[in-house]
Amino acid sequence: MKVFLNPGHAPNGIPDPGACGCGLRECDVAKSVADLVEHYLTAAGVEVVGNMQDDDLYTITSVANASGADIFVSIHCNAFNGNAKGTEVLVYPGSDAGRKLGDCIQRQIVDSLGTVDRGLKARKDLWVLKSTDMPAVLVELAFIDNAGDAALLRERQDEFARAVARGITDYEQMI
Image (cartoon, rainbow, N blue to C red):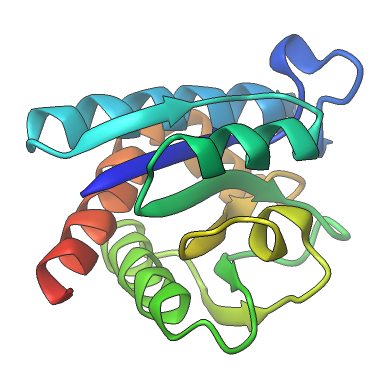
């Protein structure tokens, strides 16, 4: 199986760092976790055909579609009001394969890190979900503006990465 990874938002946070909170920037956390996911997938014999962070969503999806990837995984951090917390995975409505992939990743994160299970959410408006030719998910690891979740995002990036990688390999075994 070939995987395309997309850490959310612009490299180095310019022009868009994504969500910010509790001394963290989404672009930094997403890139760190994606790089670790790539490491764990490669060690497990899964081919990573892309690990691309860019603010231009058209470019990301075009490169992903041309890469021969079997799945697309975009990694992000959520934010709301400082009180919301937990993990959710966004999927394109009607994509059974995307739903299965999302469920595998969601399970691994929630079970491994004990985050609140916010479940899978269908989103037809997100460019990276609607413009990819392969099953795609957008993983919201945790809430960057919630003190408890932010502590996890700061201190347990390796565990998040291992959980995402295990979710991908769980999905690979299902198909």
